[in-house]
Structure formats: C-alpha cells, structure tokens
Length: 76
Image (cartoon, rainbow, N blue to C red):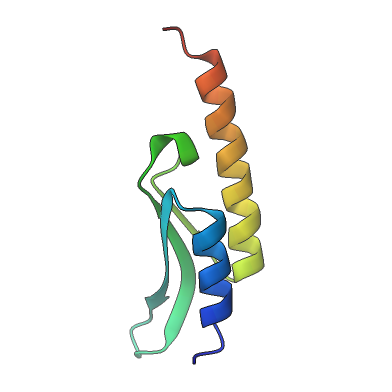
C-alpha cells in the first residue's frame, strides 16, 4: 500500500462528485493532488489542483459551498 492511498480513499469518499488522483511529474514521481469535476452539483471549477491532501480537501469543501450557493440562486 502506498502511503497516499489512505488520503486518496478519504478524499474520494468525501467528494464523490470529483475524480481525485495524484498527478505524475516529468521525472515519474508523484506530483500535485488533483480533482476533476464530474457532478456540477459538487463544485464550480472543472479542475482543482493543490500541493497536499489537506489543502485539496479544504478547496473541495469550498467548491461544494460555492456550488450549493449557485444552486440556491439559480432561477428555474
């Protein structure tokens, strides 16, 4: 098991509307923590990229809040 697997599993469980993964750097090592939006109700920005899992978690919480605010203000 890779040390990041637990963090990836937690993020994927907490944010099912995103595809969450680690990028691969030019030298083959793992890079940034990334999330791509698959459910428009789960966020605003199509891609969120951060340096660590805790920062990505905080950014995805903010995405969720922004998406909820957008849904409340949309005119049907």
